[in-house]
Image (tube, one colour):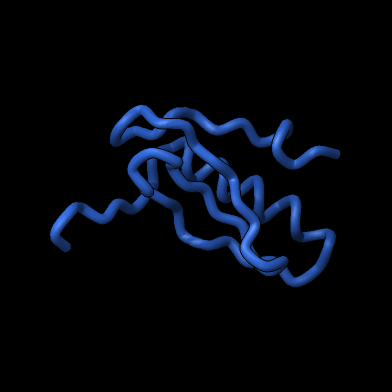
Amino acid sequence: MDIFENNPLQDCPYCGGAGLLEEENGWCWYAMCVDCGAYTGQFPFDTPERRAEAARMAAHTWNIGKILRSNPGE
């Protein structure tokens, strides 16, 4: 099972840039925009079985637009 193929990301709702699904040091997944830096929260996992579910949750959260964004000057 390929996590990236099974969890396609829509374009960023802020700037239209490409979304990227990232794994952080083997403990969580999050999605982010490669252009503006908008991102989801982190979705931790503690077992290999929960790894795919955490990636699915990060992708779903991104695709429904529940993301954070830092504006310049903050």
